[in-house]
Image (tube, rainbow, N blue to C red):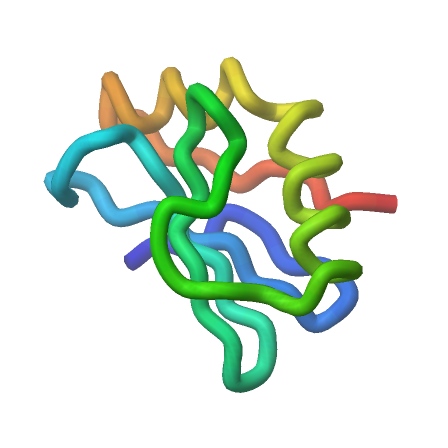
Length: 82
């Protein structure tokens, strides 16, 4: 599963050929979650509130790039949240 970015101990990965809806995986310590790209909602798993807010903030910045990656399987790294 390619790593899209990493910030503040949070790792974002995307797995091509994964099940719908379009989503990305978040790993933060012992926490794991799947975030829907189109709605930016947690669809599986859980994250601490602060980490979830940072991930959603980051994903909102790169939502179109994430959806494009999902649809085309044209992977590229994205900048971290600053």
